[in-house]
Length: 495
DNA sequence: AAAAAAC
Image: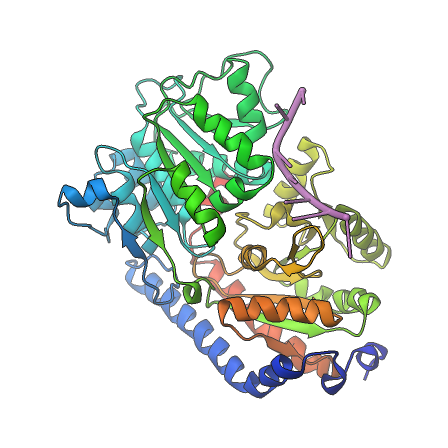
């Protein structure tokens, strides 16, 4: 075997993995069989969608959304209706055309369940949870475009907030994509450097980050008097984050009391759940059970490295696999993103880095190059952990296991889920590989696995060819699916 | 001991 293999900790030498790692080992065959079955099911569904042109093509595991109607709604004795056709939702002709042009032939589960609730009259607040890559953005964008009165195209009527510049830009693209046939549609991005100073914002839809939006309202650049809808994407993150939670609350308090509040995320930890309900009083809610949070199409794996230095060698070993499709590597700090990028480039690999220390235009450009496939490997921080939709991403690497809190004492299970959700988008399959290298990182990954009741497949670095083959199999399936599974974001970039 | 988000 190569030098590398001999430097990787052997299974029986791995530090402190007694219970967990052994059970993973024992379950490995079962895991693989399950992963294959899931991937196979996804493939079958995609094939079916192509044959019949009927399905959404979305590989959704059988999860049930618990629908809890607000008290008011229940009192009206309105039966809850989950739509299975766009045509059942009373959408405008232009909006229907936009959705169908994106190959969104049928609503996904979260779309079918949330839209009738969001569009009910009088408007009701909503908190909706659904796994990564199941169409939440298209759901709230459709709600926004359905609520806006386009006879007043210059009047701000809907506002969507996101936790990063990149995500705000992406949502802006989806509004333009789904609203392609709406005339005149005006969307503004309220992010640093994107709005002309001291000029009124004349767009019906505004997508932005909390600080800039707050600023632009205070300066009276943005007239919010006619605002009908406020969306918080990644709502748990928006409300939980120190600083951002305050900014979101201040923005909300400047809006008309009648504004409809829509909260969307793949995760709503109990800790922020009650606060979220205060933020959006009397909201309808769609919730997932903890066991339903994981996307079955994502094969979750891990590699056991002997120490921190070996992680870099393993990363380089994986480079060939990364470039079959596209890959995102998550690290803890901006500095390590820079450093690993420099090192990999020096070692002859093509890798770009993106984090919030870059200026706005540079960030836009970097992500745009990644979306176009010009750059295949992106090393980044948690700035891209949430929401970013690049359908051709087939592999996510947790170079550092996400931790929360000041002392890194606790694994960040939510961030893990969002990070791996950058692959396996809308019915595709994908791979995530997490690097562990000491007791702390083992325990952290074990904690995350326990949180979701999942097992991770161990890639044996002593048999690199086999490990590689196992990953390659999923990546190839992802490539095969790419031609069929629809993505609003892919279309947005094209237009 | 981090990242992100405003001027």
